Image: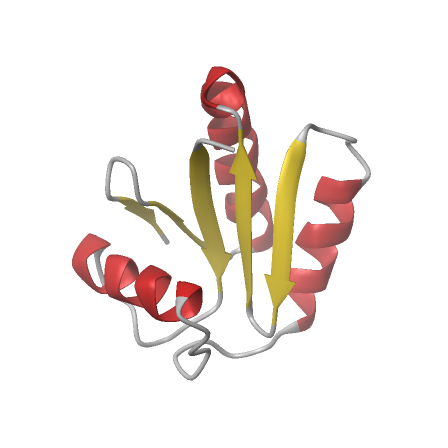
Length: 100
């Protein structure tokens, strides 16, 4: 897996810099800045129904998703759209792109 993104629920994040900080904290196992919410489960279930070649590591209030670089553009667009639909935040660390 060469490409990663983060779907999350947090009232603490207000831009790409703080989203990068959150991403690093989650990768270190610190989930204190995210809040668990049912819509994370809804997005996760919808994503898993698609049978994409991805990894999806779900925790309380977040999902870290990975895929091969060759699938990244498609997965990026799809997950970004899912986040808008479910009103969740999205962060793509390779380009430091944050979407609320």
